[in-house]
Image (tube, rainbow, N blue to C red; front, side, top):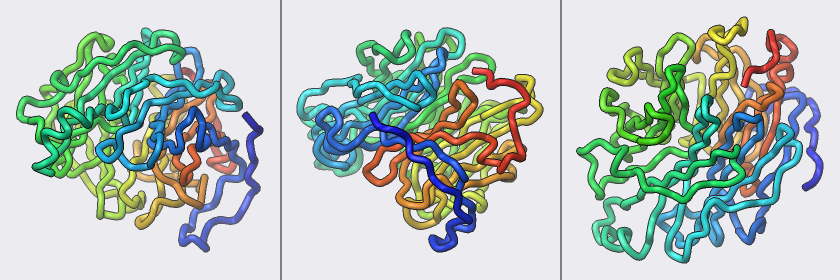
Length: 380
């Protein structure tokens, strides 16, 4: 599959208008090259670390065009696995093999830490049934929410089931434009699996499972959070739930917090996180609750108020109130991005580098210029 490239050290990216230094070392590999598996294009990365430490990278195989699922008849969900922290990747495999007119898109992943089961959600559309019924209104598209699971660390996947009618509030109709956010959801410390749904023009909903994924439902106690578009949820070390949201037209990320598991939300624009209106991702790296000396929160995004460029990795020690370290990973084209922690403690990022679906791996040492290191081996 080819060797990693190693970036040299530079003094920053001021020429691109970004006064953030570039990380001194980054392991880089294009893992879904154009034409792989017969697909001309790929989009919408998602990545997760399985319980055994393998990395699973999931992607839209957009066969003939980069356009979204309502505009094309040929998208399948593809994936690859790495057993060595991303040094090498398996051949491409397909979770779906839809006939012409049926499409799946915007995959997202959750790991149940207890069982090791992996849940893959994506939005499904049949162009020849529901879509044509709704098309004259030009109001919305009846995406279904499909779920497939793996009990062998991503090697094989169950047949899809449709969970849309289980996880949406009763007030949402088929004509409402709703979809599951790509990237990843979470498992709380209590064991609840939680994920986000976008209601275009209104905000977002939470859904989840309290029985290790046997059943799924809208979180009845949780209210609509707004404003928000594609949004990621985290449970912080102090138990607060945080939403890090895309907010088109604002030029920045929008942060919402709840101290009652989503019943009430307070929000603010984070002026320290410029964003062009693009999907991005936070992850809780370490917590004092797990015996580490520091709480560490990571966030990766296209760090630009205009244009999808300048992929930046940010690190916070105070649950995102401030960002102590920032490093530019890619000063060129940078679209959707997803983040995970490798079994060796390195930080893995899977992102759209233009049409190149690229995996990079960065160490905590290089992110912080040697100022920070883990106090113990990384705990999966």
